[in-house]
Length: 293
Image (tube, rainbow, N blue to C red; front, side, top):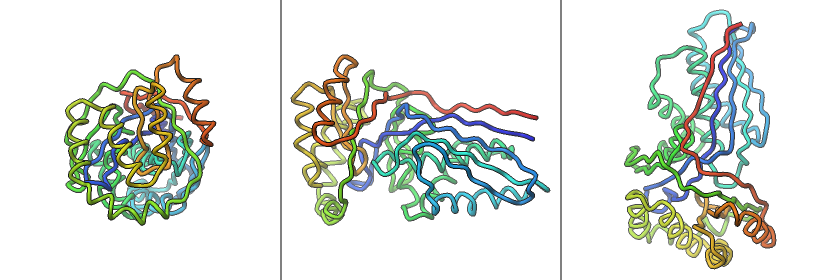
C-alpha cells in the first residue's frame, strides 16, 4: 500500500487581519507531521490524532467532507487513514487548525496523486477554514507561512499574497501563553478597527523588510486597545528583548531574544504566570516522502 509522510511546521501571526484586513505571519520551527496511507476498508476515512493538537471535530469533519470524500471516490476499493502528529499547542494564537488543515490536504493530495499546485492546496485549506466558521481568506497568512516558511504579508480581505521573504530573523522566540477570557477583547473589536489605518501603516513598515519593528509596534498597539498584557510586553522590551509581539489576537506574548537571554526571559514570563515554549523562526518549507509497500 502507498503511504505519504509530510513534515511541516507552524506559524506565528504577528499582524492580525482583524485590525485592517492586512496580515503577516512567519514560519516557526514547531513540528507537524501528517501521514496519509491507503487501507483495505473501501470508502472509509479514519483519523488518528497525536501530539498537542486537540481533536477538532468540526475541522476533521470538514477535511473529510469537503476534500477526502470528494477525491477518494477516484480510487476504487480503498479507504484512507490520516495520522496527525502536531506539536503546535491549540488555542494560543498560532493557528494550529490552519496548519493541520493545509498539511492534511497536502498529504492526501500526494497520496491520491492529484495534480494540484501549492495554490490549489492553499485554496482547499482556506475553504475548510471558511466552513468551520472563518472568512474564506482569514487564515491565508498562517497557511502560507506554515506551508512555505519565511515571512509573508497578505491582503486577507483581497485573498492575495503581497510579499514573501525567504529570510527570517536570526533570533529565538519564546512564546508565553496562559488561560485568559476573550470576552473583553471581542467587546473591544469595533474600537480596535477604528485604528485600521494606523495598523495598515505598521503593516507597511513590515512588508518593506522591518519584520521585528512591525511585530513590536503591532503588539504594543493591539495589546493596549485590546486590554491585553501590555505591561509584560513592554517590560520584556525594557529588559532588552530584541522584539516582542502578540500572536494573532492573543492570548500569547511572543518574545524575540538572543540565545544568551533565553533563561532570563523564560523566567520573566513564568513569573508573570505564563507557560513557555521556545522555538525559532524558520525559512524552511515542507518536505515529504512516498513509500510503497
